[in-house]
Image (cartoon, rainbow, N blue to C red; front, side, top):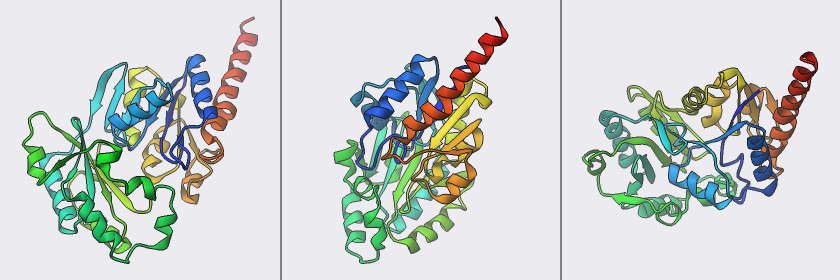
Length: 300
């Protein structure tokens, strides 16, 4: 029976040094060779996901920007965007607090021109908890987006809203001071039909309420005509919760927080122990082989 396997990227398929281990690559390709669909369902931009897949010679459909941009077979299946009023409200809150943030769009990733200055201000503030510096995501998330994602820059959010054909799927805000994070979440929660998630202790991601990994999984399952009970979600963070709640089988990484593990059906090894490969081999492929044998025996 064909399965749709949705893999989160950071903290899941990617290890703590931002690489995909050989064991995970082989397990993904083995699942594909057995007829299963393996998709990447990540908070990363489409450009970032495609670059990583290409690096490791992997070919997978994707749900980018937390499932707001879903692609398969070279086609855009669904794009869930924020409306102009939502965009203005979120940008105003972030700009007032001088938060470094990125805007994920259907035309690439954008950031305020003073992104680096905003980051330097908070790094010099002395208000960042020590544990943030020790987090495996800290170096990657505080890297200049121009260097990491070839992000484009803007002076004011209206420039993007006035750009013909451009639609905004997600805000990614780097909020390193806990008090600011609590304050901003409170402010942004009042945005009508907005949805807030996190993928680390020091960021928030803002999408339209219909834009999440659960919806991205549904769109892909519909496209490949796979019942939701035959879908599998593997992840580690809060932004994975919608796909855990949607999937027929939910698998938490060993490095996930306890509340994530408790809500999932199964727990695999950590992202540094090839937890994706372990989950695919032990929880999906072995079950498939067992069901195939059972089917063959009953039809002899």
